Length: 264
Length: 260
Ligand SMILES: Nc1ncnc2c1ncn2[C@@H]1O[C@H](COP(=O)(O)OP(=O)(O)OP(=O)(O)O)[C@@H](O)[C@H]1O
Ligand SMILES: [Mg+2]
Image 1 (tube, rainbow over the protein chains, first blue to last red):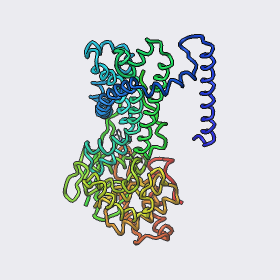
Image 2: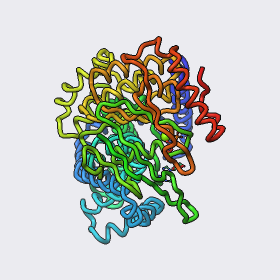
Image 3: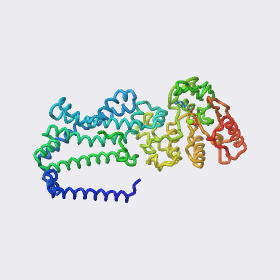
Image 4: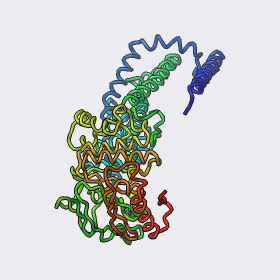
């Protein structure tokens, strides 16, 4: 266990690291070596302007709507399928090849296929989010199910629990820590997925905005949007962790629950 | 009354053969009796107890409880496990009520109904703690309270104090005696400790091994209530040395503690 002072020291080191990084960026920007590296001060200057512009807020709303439509059902079905895969061997045998294929494929390669199927619109964006999140939740939930202590199952059985009760009262709570780890990763991946898919279309959402700003060589604004996406991802995953801490009081440090599979 | 009639159990082995863990075991346990089972490691004590619990099916013979053949777990029985087996995600009160919850009570009702049992084992102030915050002895008290809470006629205990240190173990034995005298349940108690068997029981089944069989059933003619002084009486010492002699004869098992 890390002591408080070590934690503080780590924090100080992070801040120093960040400061040095920003300083180097600033110097490179000032040297005007490349139009891709505007000075960091110029980017920070662009932030307020960009983050409050109607264009940005519209794009953000579009991206959020896609995530809000696709992520919850993907998580719910992923958890459901993961519970079955983890508990029942025949289901595992039936679905394992499919799941492993999706986990090892570079998903970017599938995006053109999705666009062929769903067209150049929201449908393809939603499908991208689903393939980026569903399988990750399935494998992590299934791995969580497999951590179930057979002694607890036997104990519950001795008190008369049937399979349904074992599932609900023993297997599900046992699976929760890894399940949450899966949800945390899926949340980060959903943001990645929406940006990638929107970039292909190039018109809507934050991905579309990135694409257009890049095309227009509006580098400062581009960086402002990218920074936002990065921060947004961080904050979302932190939010999931906060929920996790409240929901799993017996797990001492949820962030220590290493996910079974992070995905490519 | 529990009647165990010609029980046998075979397990399949990896090489495709089969292994006889128990063979032709017959005995009966009277109502409200404290009945212990002692025997070398691997002689089938746990398997036998799980059969009474309805968790393992015999491959020969049958078990009748009050004339009804056991086909699975039932409301008349509750088990206490060597490794306590508490739910790490639930607080102590929910753990004690877990058996009741599985038998149809809501979480709220079961927690309420669990309170007197938590009190019986002296852990009321730990009601909202989690299992990992409790010592082994306290965790096993929770395991015991959970079993008592469902109001079983028969308590099945598989080396319940085996994972505890010697002093805690002795305290737990005394507490169990007190509780048993109040609760008036039949107890089948598996143990490795001859002292424990003699101190607690009305009768002790000594098992033989390879395959597991009944070697003998000993009466324990010690007066009740059992007290601290019981452990120093000549009858007690005679009994434990007899068991030691029997068990040592079966196999030089180093896990068997010699009587003090
Ligand atoms: N599910 C199983 N599959 C195969 N063999 C088993 C199974 N359960 C028990 N056995 C075997 O049956 C024998 C009896 O096991 P059991 O656990 O009942 O012994 P025990 O008397 O409780 O031993 P201990 O005192 O060490 O707890 C052992 O040889 C064990 O390996
Ligand atoms: Mg055993």
